[in-house]
Image (cartoon, rainbow, N blue to C red; front, side, top):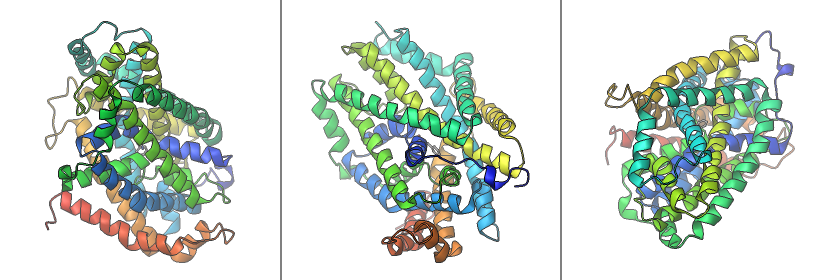
Length: 453
Ligand code: PHE
């Protein structure tokens, strides 16, 4: 870093700002659109138990590790690794930047859809449509060219606008407004949903454990889902960590953010499944759950007009606070390593990612026949980032902390230079040295077939 010296780096102004921004990153489409159907399909409560174990045993320690690297390094993901170590560890940071490109490219496809559906809700576009018609409209929209791409670009422009405003006046300010809004909206939606007749069955589907559904591939999905949902393994939290002040208790922050993320994921299930069952719809509708099934429900439900607007605002808000954190990974890198001004860096990052993002969007339409390794471009980016780059990133991050960085630095950061008690330090060190890397490696190698029991 040359022309942007450290004293000019942005930082988060308040503790609530830190939590709002980091939880904003974690809580996203992964919680509201992905978690409910993955959990529902994979054994409900049984999946939930495995998921919670991963969140606690791997997610929280990795999150703490990332925040620590960032705050110690005081730089972007690449720069922080470079500063804290000799050797090639900066490649882990670079891998995070690549992951950010891939994630943002496909994520803005879905985020764009949420804007289309928000608009449809406003103009009462679901009114009077049968389930089949709603399905057809979704498929027609999804496979068209102009509208999904336009919404994707609008979503990216909103993200870029907030990023350009800076860390405190952009990221933190909007997170502090949007996250409480999100919590309020999801609570309203949950109350509506559980008071529908027949809601019980939906809750049973989500919570009753069915262990017969647990296979290695389900365990693999649970790990990928936990990593994706917590935004770990790609440097978003290293970047945010670099904006956290020295007096913030990182352990507490990592716990609070993980708890918030998990609660919102569970609430999303509580919001969606009772409604799905109340209206006798197939709960394993996957992708279409949010864009076909829910409009169908809103259409039949008293007050559906208002609730559909609330729901799609909720989805868009959740997506926006996440895309912000992913774009910031790339922008911080461009600013600090390529010496660009923030505005230029944002324009460069947003436009180059949008360029590849368009291919993801078109992979539901004109490019749907174009496959690599049997997957569309969207599918490939999703799979490669969530199931490969994030777990590998998380693995390398804990190895780096556990075996390279050294206990003194870790203790110094966790105790805020000796001012906080470090009761969990021993446990934390044990987890990042042994438990987390071994667990990630086992699940990973087993699932890709390199290991057999
Ligand atoms: N955690 C976000 C979600 O659940 C997605 C995300 C992944 C954001 C990685 C940042 C980094 O939707």
